[in-house]
Image (cartoon, rainbow, N blue to C red; front, side, top):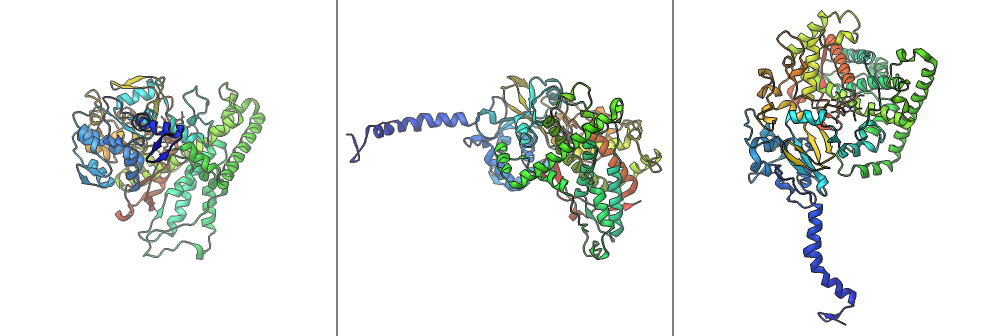
Length: 586
Ligand code: HEM
């Protein structure tokens, strides 16, 4: 029997020892190479990817510990390559060091807030990062506006909904459109109705609140705007809102003087306690578990599904939706031939016998309607929260808007869908579009390559994920974003350089004061094309309705600087950390 250092070995042990060098020098490096994503040739990448297997993950993790968000990290990497060139860009953000100096993530990001930065001559509108295992972990980041329009609207056979998005939504709404690869549209829902009830309720609530505000006092607005968006979208989806604002108004009106909010001068922030109903809690409870920032979304949802609370929230929400579908079926039968004209909720419309949606099964219908809430509630509310901040900082915009709406006669009578069309109230349309441009509601969108192809002349293998930074694009000069000199933006000075970071509804108006959508090519808050936002028309209508109602009722007074900044937390959309309002009746 062979011996090693005096120990006798069996033949299996001898073989294992003989194979160890092979394992160490050949198999392990090969495995590591297969697992570590390899950069695509010709596309700049960060040196951070030198970490085996996790690639850029370690740096991104460090970045996140400073409480910035992963999409800001993406924006930072893009700007590093764009403004400092490939060599320095590759160094940027490597574990907090830049050019050998220690820097915090926030300090690094501030580099790009400066005006007058010069685009690197070698920026080609494209860079890449690598997160996780294998080449499937490669993310290519594209900023050229024309190429992005092409990818989203024309090259849909080559680029479809990315797995990263599907994995996030499939745990909660596996049959919802957002969790499906590109397929023929399943729905034929349309909106041309205006829902003013929820908007009127928010104005009523704020009137009640302002009555108790003392000099210089203000209150938090983002939850109120969530209740508005929730009431509006549930009304649109089911024809029956969650009724949060009416309940809130009722609870405030009936509050005894002792439980009313205090209005003492030392406390500027006034709180109005309210506990929304069980349906809202259950829906929020469920939607808040979307694994948006998880490295393993399916596993995260599996863990969630073991929680009794998650299961009971899901049961409650599903039961409510099935109940609404059953009621809608009864309404549909009762309406008979007239049903098309009378159907005004999404469920009602979905049940119409118009050939396309009739084929939806009950669970498909359930997930489509739940998707309304997942995609249409937080997005609308957060956009409005940003809108309140922008307006409070721009008194002239508020005054001009008030004049336009008053001249249109909307102070005297209830507004209709037609009153809010762009040609009737162009400044309102411009203000809504400007808020959408700057709110950064959706930081970016992803697509996956369905075949080997090229983007900006670079080879993109099948299975590569593309990320398009919508929010960043909306605030950088077109020529900086472009892959080459071909992409020039509108020649108008209002769409150039430093002004792009400012709130200027005027930029959307032509010389005759008419709204001109064609100028905002780099502003794609709803993405674009077949898989762009399904609720875009509805969302714009909701925003315009709410902005008009608030503006006609209140002047939004400015909030002291220490209670107003641009910091945000990110979930489905970017929510301002500080969202105080001080509405003052005109
Ligand atoms: C300000 C409000 C909103 C913003 C900024 C917004 C933005 C977006 C964005 C960026 C996408 C991704 C599109 C893509 O991957 O290319 C999307 C998808 C979607 N949105 Fe919205 N959205 C808003 C409101 C709404 C509303 C009110 C609804 C209500 C129905 C809605 C329903 C959807 C649906 C169903 C999808 C998935 C479409 C598909 O998979 O084909 N959104 N939205």
